[in-house]
Image 1: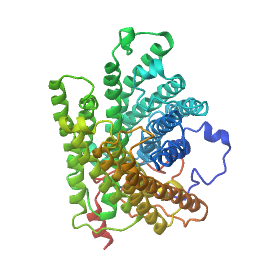
Image 2 (image 1 turned 120 degrees about the vertical axis):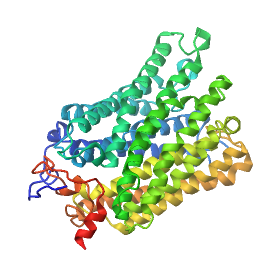
Image 3 (image 1 turned 60 degrees about the horizontal axis):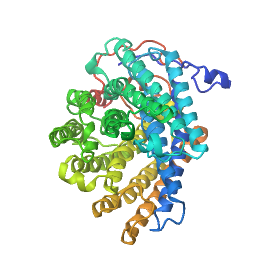
Image 4 (image 1 turned 90 degrees about the horizontal axis):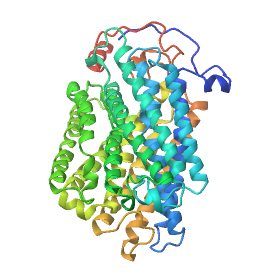
Length: 537
């Protein structure tokens, strides 16, 4: 991959007006706008989680009332799922890196890209207003008929926010898919694309096909709540299990919107910091597409105890086991890539090892929940909470921070403290395990989730979990401090501090507004580290 690097004014160094940011069509600036909103949502979600863990430190409901507790865990889930986990890697890292990684000057539809951010902000503001007016108490899944008739909280306002936000996801997926199809640099064939781009492509398929379902579902929920339509409420002739089918038909594929892009990040970082091509490149690429397809076929494993037929339950159990295969392909291929690699122990690689450890636990415990007999015992217990967080936080958030640390020098042109970043990764890893591993035991012992009062014998494990959450919060606060510090006091990064092979590393840091002075010509695969290291030697 070759291009010319000339000294040019980058998109961050010039002081611009607020208006120039709010009306920008530069994909890099839009990524930073997303970063700002997602960070606020992450902070709010963390505050709600802290309230939950404080309450669960003691068996009695002595910190908040039952109703307030319901609102805390609901708002935590809504903030983290819809405004952090789903947009974090695609909207921030994807927006910033995708055009650079394929040698394009921008995404295919820059104006639609900006529109998707505005739609996201509008949806977030509706949801934020619902939080300020007392929150919502239905759980982030909005299960009916409670959400349509019994709840006296801000279901409509929150539903409108989630409904609007879905359109942002659809627009982003459409933009990315067209960009990947039509704007790759000369010579960049499908099998020369970085695996991060493959992951974004698979994610875009899910965003476009699945997101309209949740929009329709939330719309029907609103009609029933506002006008008394009998869609889900059995008193009106509706079927509450229908809501679960529709909700999880979107929400289980949405898990892969959250996890596929971080998987792409892991491939990039492992290749760079082991100085090797990714083992089995084509298998890893196609496994992303396989995960996206299989993700549409497993939604009913959330309904094993909801009254579905035993025959359909057996089919969905088998498919739930099958969807683990492409994830296993990635994990084994990453491990093979590390084998005999020249491991470079920099912060992004530390985050990757944290991802591998936590995602492995999350994936293996998912097999327990895919087993019909075990799921009857474990359903709606803290085992499910622990499994979900090992996948979502242990996988998606660890992958997000691996990518943020990897591309931060490219985004800002500055280096952060590697020792501080390593310490933060260790704090998050240890704090996360201390928080959620005890919850596997709690769930196995029978503690139901979403209860603010529990039996005395569960207190020790809950205290461990709350202590781990405190450590986790310290780790996240440390990340914010040294990244912000690096912007003002960090050392200049240079164009390619990691000696990586991607096209994004062949232009300035931060990149110039048009990304490249000349359109790059791609002449080799995405991970030709062996050839390059040989040339350097």
